[in-house]
Length: 340
Image (cartoon, rainbow, N blue to C red):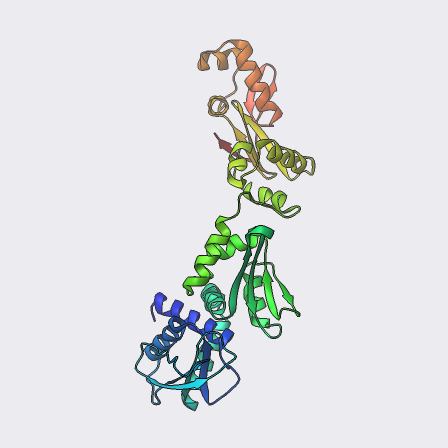
């Protein structure tokens, strides 16, 4: 089975888990007011199974004159539902053996985290909605569920999405931009054009990134597996350089990060077995493959004695060189030296 087919099946599974009647053992059923989602589900079912029994579509609308049909070759039956503001469809396949195969496929996918993104896309297409009120700056994604759903929570936790379940709204609520950005990145609403358009419009309404307490500090620390300047980090997190520097200094006081001066820039990195030096200091280290006096180093670098002595002392403070009897040696330092 190719990757695109697996992705579509996972999306269909998510849609069914959100919308469908997944308790019955005699039929596969989903309910939705989006004709595109019903057609999508039908296309997946017919691709993966040879259907012995043809599906049926039950159409419910508030008027006898309103009889929308789906662009698929299946029988349609029409019913009245005066409470319904918009027509909706119930798609049903009655086949006990088919249901067994479907349930087995669903359970396999539920145990495969690599499909969680696509399953969540299907889930949101079926039961998700966007609550966006610009004036009050309300920005929330909701996934309706009559009661807490263990599998849905497992998916959200795996994707590192913070959520809460509201008994009053009978829904999972997801807010805060750092959460919503993650969901935007994985195209959570891609299967539903209307929801997707509203979600993107909501995200475009943000003017500045508001991080929760201590979140920026953690993200900065995690970013410093490799060297960065405060300016680079300020651009990455859309914050002023002064604020970024304050947090970096705090992390340094906590002995979590180090900074190394290279030319006119400070490079920050997690406290580890790494030292950052300039290309000039690297030249000096390379010269000290055999012991040398300061005057010899100055001559090789074509600089005055005072400049060479200053650079050597800077390397000494980093424990990369040592001096004995007016001779400079390279130290046996176990730290990794990174050159900028």
